[in-house]
Image (cartoon, rainbow, N blue to C red; front, side, top):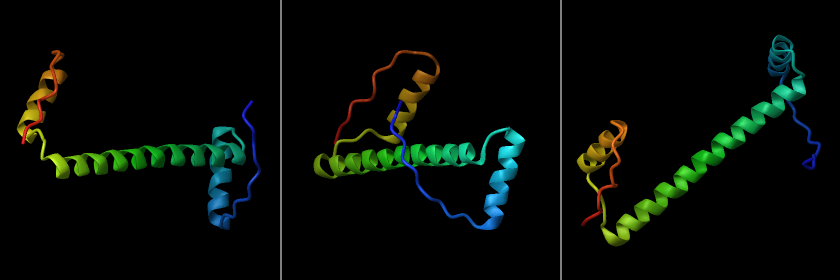
Length: 94
């Protein structure tokens, strides 16, 4: 079982009421609703942060090397994959 830590969260009355109404409709506790919301938010933001890091690394690599594939090359490759064909990624070039 993972370790659990208690934390405090202040919500305005209107938001707290909305959480309680949703919890009642879903037959869950307000605690479950809030925990699920935080879990989903953190997971989504971690993915966004990873995407941002990857994009920045790719940009830095491009700036350093000039290697790239054109949009047309990438589109053609993706079209082949979408059609169910096995296709190698386009070769990067200057």
